[in-house]
Length: 246
Image (cartoon, rainbow, N blue to C red; front, side, top):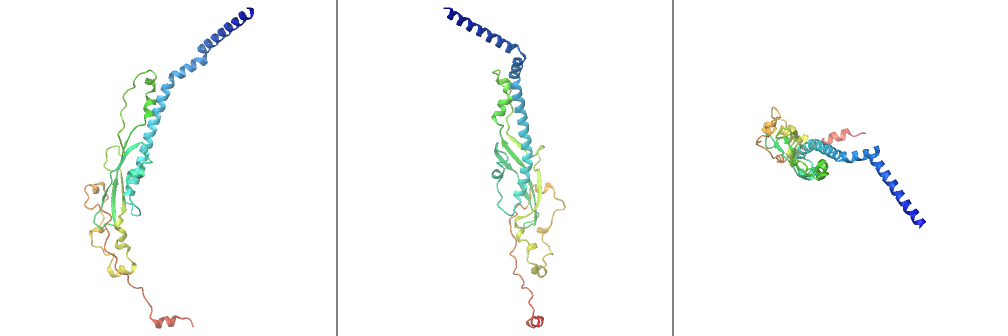
């Protein structure tokens, strides 16, 4: 009986010690810091979510500029297949559901040597779900529904609704058959450099207005076939013999 009473008193003593330690932890500075952290954690999560959201938007703005450059260069590419925007830009914008590039080209003539190209990139994308959860964390921990956030539908490379945000002057794809590439032996005979056609006229200024309803848009039309080259000069046999070393 004495042993049992000693065990019971020991258990009671241990419980009293645990109570005192727990009370000390709650009332101590460490305990108050822990409780403060738990209270402000949702606010930290909301702040981090907002920072990530702004950061993603900044990256999208930078990528849009790069996409605009790609759009005009690809529209004037004459060395390989011109790929659609969705196939080449999807890796730059993984959250997008649709990528559009409003490209337009203008030629002064049917067989112009140069062309004027304008482009603007538009994205249809959604905000990641985890960002909404983080931003609404202060309301979620209290069991409340957060304020309604405007959904993201469209982001454009133009802040002011411009029709084109990148323009470039490039050679046309059909310029590979232009008279400028004829064999030198044909230059004098055909007066290659005396152009009278409007195809070789350039506009006084390369303005965006040229892209408004251009008359010629196809840059793949080739010109006439290059004439047969003139045979190179051959020396008379007698001169060849005189030139031989004795």
